[in-house]
Image (cartoon, rainbow, N blue to C red; front, side):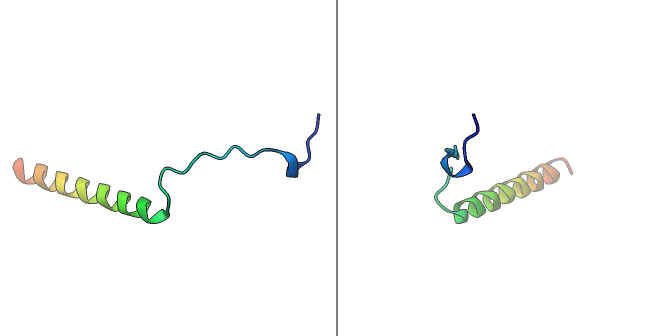
Length: 46
């Protein structure tokens, strides 16, 4: 059975965060954590 596109139900996932600013903060925080981790590891084994 073919259903017209306007009657099909879209199954979109619920967004994890309410806005893109939360994603930007998460990615920036993750990158800063990785930079700090690699900095301390590099200094520890230098």
